[in-house]
Length: 210
Image 1 (cartoon, one colour):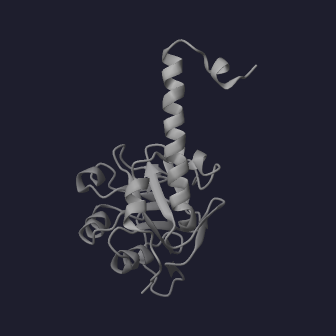
Image 2 (image 1 turned 180 degrees about the horizontal axis):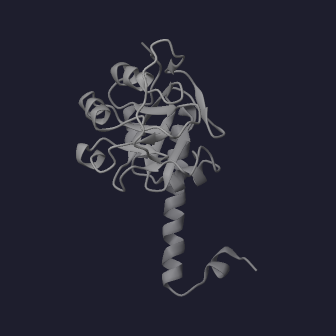
């Protein structure tokens, strides 16, 4: 069983109120996963501790293992060897993960049952949809709860995973409180800018650009 320190519940609750774009910018342009990873349905959002899982290309056995091993609230973050022509996840797995009270799935790969996933209501973020079936190699190499990289972003167990319509951002666990605070400050500042824009000023004037 993979076990690791997870962020305090209040930090996760605070982060859930912040957009991914704000969090990414306020943290110093950090943690943006590849832009191809998007919610499988527009209303899906995730916010919780990362539970990294890796498996062989075209094989979803390690994802099934992760559902059984992860703790409530964990967001599975899956890397499948850059192989996208497979539907690694679908209705059955979403149903099982929801029953285990997991927080969501972020996969650098494709899923299937796209028309049904919104009805199940378990948030899924993926590269897209693919009907191709997967295998289950019981001798295949994979990992649960071990750091991995997607794109150029390192995801360690317990890092914050925040996903919304724009994509997914990863915040290192040690920086969550700081990034939350900076994000709230950024949002407040931008509200002031928008008030000035509504008052007739231009962005060029407000920011002092030439």
